[in-house]
Amino acid sequence: MINDRPLRVAIIGSGPAGMYAAGHLLESPGGTLIDGELKQIVHSKVAVDVLDRLATPWGLIRSGVAPDHPDKKRMAMIYDSIARRDGFRFIGNVQVGKDISPAELSQWYDAVIYAVGADDERRLGIPGEDLLGSNSARAFVSWYNGHPDFSNLQFDLSAERAVLVGNGNVAMDVARILFSPISALHITDIASHALDALSKSQIKEIVILGRRGPEHAAFNYPELMELADLPDTAIIVEGADLNALPRSQNHEAQLKIAALAKLCKEKIQGNRRIVFRFNAAPTALIGEERVAKVSLINKQGEFETESELSAGLVLAAIGYRGLAIDGLPFDHERGVIPSCESRVVDHGVVLPGSYVTGWIKRGPKGIIGSNKKCARDAVIAVMDDATSGLLPLEGTLCKDQALQRIKERVATTVAFSDWHKIDMREQQDGKALGRPRLKITVSSAILNMLKSA
Ligand SMILES: Cc1cc2nc3c(=O)[nH]c(=O)nc-3n(C[C@H](O)[C@H](O)[C@H](O)COP(=O)(O)OP(=O)(O)OC[C@H]3O[C@@H](n4cnc5c(N)ncnc54)[C@H](O)[C@@H]3O)c2cc1C
Image 1 (cartoon, rainbow, N blue to C red):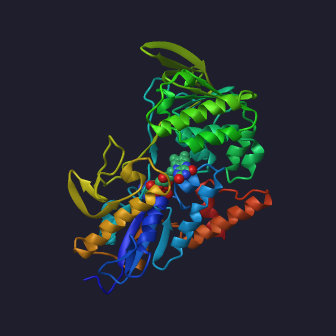
Image 2: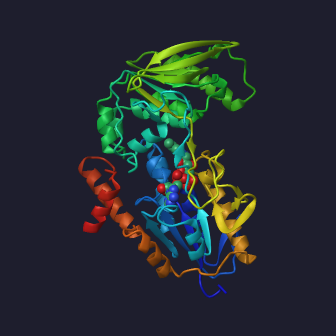
């Protein structure tokens, strides 16, 4: 029987998908609004524990979204208001799959929703990829955003040319951050180690490689157009003649080509250059210890030629990837937890009480808002299963017992009130320097700060 106690749901991951799921679950007592209709479940209340492996919440809002996009970072205010609702609890610094197993969580909670994002990256798979100076754009983005797993990385920005492999929105973010004036970055929450390194950067040219033509460019129009604001920066297209391209039937592709042509026309001069090189793919990175050159294969119609490009920094911006969690099924090809209508499935069999949402369900695509509907689908599945008596309710722990069990594994967990202390401290430290926030980028420093607060 469960009617006399709240439905206890654990959500793993406090990024957009996890927080939207919490929001849907806690929308109103006894039910949630779905398409304007109050959908009732059998319980009078829902209690949600959101666990995150980091001490700080909000996933890629904090560690992925570019620091010069404060409007997007402000999405955190919505998640903060969800976190203040009755029935919400944040338990940070707990890694599922390492500190606690999925089987234990399934035992301790009525339902578990996995919203762990895409915590890995796709690799180029070419010789020389592991040379110094070669890394993923994901590592670079996480570094400049102060993600604690990446804050001790060092990026050598002393060479004149950087090469970005892939021309999606992450490549646009990276190019923009590399060439933004330091004064513009100073007023963002970019990690101070990155601000310092970027202020000494010698990079004069960024080559953005796309293995196909401009009609297949992966960037979106708004992200491309943000490059227009970079001062003293010329924009050049190589490997394709924008004026000679056949008119694309795809409206969006046509819009992007026209925008690129306009940028090239307007941004002719500058001490810095961003080169969009199309129909070019890297075949090897060359160097002794450090990368010095990129070998390329260039396609021109039916013909292929080889060439080399000197470069001191190579960043692969070819996509994020989900990371397998010990004890849960994983689709290694797609890099996602396999699911059917948001229910986790193992070899086609539903794991009762386990659900999935966000990038770990759909793969690493879609904007912040896409996760809202995705989270809603997962919550509908939880509710339907609760109503149909399909949740395994035996062994569920009460609120205090669940925290006690977690604390038996992780001595220092982080509560939502602790996050507010971190948040306040970061903002105060930033204010002293005329910055919106000075991120604490080392996990032990965060935990020590909380101990002494
Ligand atoms: C570089 C970059 C820039 C972007 N910029 C924009 C933008 O400007 N606008 C926009 O709309 N969208 C943007 N996006 C997309 C947006 O960030 C995603 O749609 C969204 O973050 C996906 O949400 P998620 O909750 O699935 O994953 P995430 O945001 O990655 O959240 C996953 C959470 O799970 C936690 N976690 C992972 N593993 C575990 C574990 N084992 N145990 C416990 N916790 C775990 C992580 O710490 C993290 O907090 C950007 C994405 C990237 C990569």
